[in-house]
Length: 293
Ligand SMILES: Cc1cc2nc3c(=O)[nH]c(=O)nc-3n(C[C@H](O)[C@H](O)[C@H](O)COP(=O)(O)OP(=O)(O)OC[C@H]3O[C@@H](n4cnc5c(N)ncnc54)[C@H](O)[C@@H]3O)c2cc1C
Image (cartoon, rainbow, N blue to C red; front, side):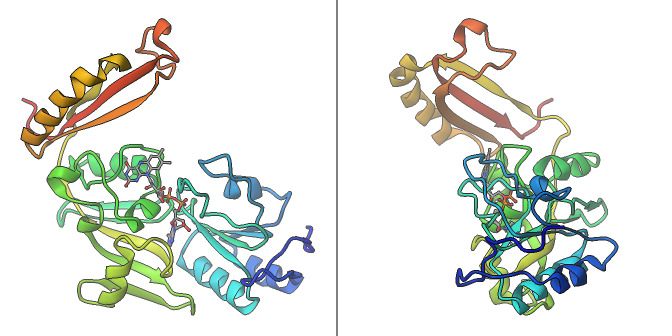
């Protein structure tokens, strides 16, 4: 194990030698994986959606539960290490990973527990939108999340969260009941309308700066398993004629209908004729979450 990463940094960007004792103390928990550069799991933890960022933390703590998160935060605080928190890894600016600090990787904490009786779900931060929908849709239930199934529930929720059903059901944070949060002093607290209201206000859109969320509790709504959805693809030069009509239709549309406009080069999707691949297109991406019968 290479314990002497020359790039290790403190919170105020001073050079730092990570003591072997810190790594040993973190590694005593049988559930957690601690990895330094070159070890198994190190690259998986630091690799994020936006491949323009290739950051190299000095130490990765791959957590399986809240206890691991508390230990990792305490270690980072005691050693004054720069700290980053990663869940689904879809933050476009690469904020989930740091260079030369300690990375708390939550991507292995993927549990989603749906209670069809109370119509609520308990979700761990490593769950993606696909993980959430897969469990909730088994009961014909959903909460408004984003458009792309690979995105993380955690970062999306902490940023507010909007998606296909937001017009009808609100933002993701409008459907957040509570969050379990490990604060910078290593304490686990619960934030909701009744407990730690100021923190509950902050995590509903304020991003990841207020502690590490280890569990989210959401309200669920009846939806699916079928919705009417799909793409309509036009040549981009038709935009001047299509967009005024689009504006009129969405102004009058019921809350159940969401239509987004995407203008881009056509990707090589199997349902698009090959002669269209790479050409400028205008796409109407639609989802109708009302009654489809
Ligand atoms: C392809 C794509 C599609 C998208 N579509 C949508 C969409 O439809 N709707 C929408 O609202 N957003 C959308 N987004 C934006 C997305 O919601 C944000 O990038 C969000 O931050 C991703 O969350 P994550 O858990 O995957 O990210 P991460 O990169 O893991 O984390 C994002 C930020 O939150 C912090 N953080 C992560 N987990 C925690 C935690 N448990 N506790 C405290 N802080 C934490 C991280 O440190 C980081 O700063 C999309 C992004 C991409 C790349």
